[in-house]
Image 1 (cartoon, rainbow, N blue to C red):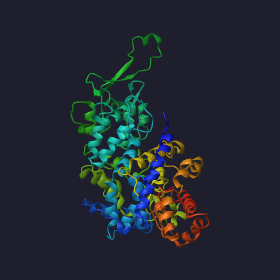
Image 2: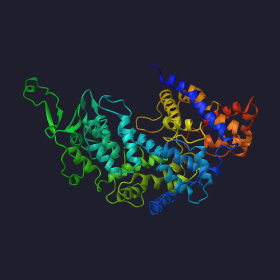
Image 3: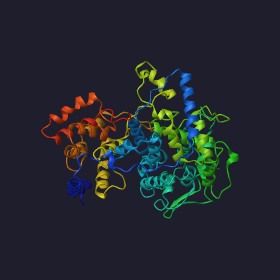
Image 4: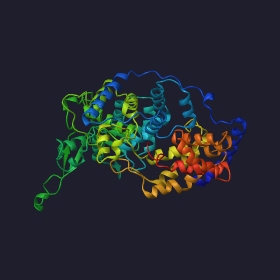
Length: 551
């Protein structure tokens, strides 16, 4: 049985011949000129302009209260890059950048953000980010748990822009086989040695869907929150009817969650003492919101997404903010403060949560609002970053766009896209997508995770940096040949100035400054040939600090 590396090597000659034929047939001297690209399609407004204005006003009040002057506006290409990184988990291709530059509409950024959110790459990326929180990264019991099926199902829901409360209801309450009904993998993630651990599901529901870290209440009453051990047990008991068989996940009305009791110290009384106690299902608050449905899980799902359950809407908003901006409005994401008695329109979290609830839990609308708000368009540069505690004050008030490292999945996606002038997506040639798949698998295995136990992004370690700089994949990606960006730019660009410009656009989504042109021109001219020079330049750019971060 050949390995995937052997399969990849077998495919490369076919890809090379195909690409060479295309290059020779094109006869172009300027790869992807803007004049040859169709303008982007129009996008219907979603009516959220008023919410964006209210959010900007609430954040402006934060700046005034903190005595902070916000950073200046970022360049449009800088905002475009962060939109693709945050919402789609990759960088835009030169093909997409050319179309963006050819778009003369003053409101082009808003339209392009909508186009990114409607792209399948965005749905796939957002599904991976949400699946990381919803089902974790552990392998799970392979026979009954299929993370890939769950992630693909979630991506399809996001692409169709299904209301997120309905998606959550399906995950929590539906039954079926984990391959035919992928949403049930949210439940089967908790299977271990043939037994469902309801405590795992209770903790996941609380942390991800309520923004509350209540796991310690599994053993004792919560020391800081009004959550008792019995309430935690009641939340776990909502999954007590679940039975997992060869036919899938189903609910047995006769089943109930039982808690094992410790044996009494008195050995004589041990024979008479009960070995366990039954736990009735209950929720930690809002009992009157519970509807009487067919199963305990259906009751729990209805309670979770009830319009009165403000913790749910606030938790979703905070996690969406973290996806778009790199960190949440409140950190940690699973330790949100209790909501006030009445929503505070001056609090961005409450303001957005109310909009999310009022507009049918429209996640795409929420993400669009976040990406069109003023902080998303601010520069990351600010004088306060050089002062003691200045960066902390600045970040707390959201006075500049935060700077965060790229995760390994985003890093490899950006690296692969940076080697192609054309867009790499699900419409790309099968061979191109196959090569990308194998490269991603290898890179993710060698690079390793960049998130801690709480899901917070961490800077790359020295071994990870060495993998990125000197690994086999890094060499393959920047090699100048007829089917990579360095090779095509070397052969098709009119002169060295255009080669520099295209290299910076391809890797960093921007044009080089005069100083950068002067400093990097020698990389091209000093090499024995233009191909070798472009290879050196691409290696330098893909290993720059700028490429490995969202700024």
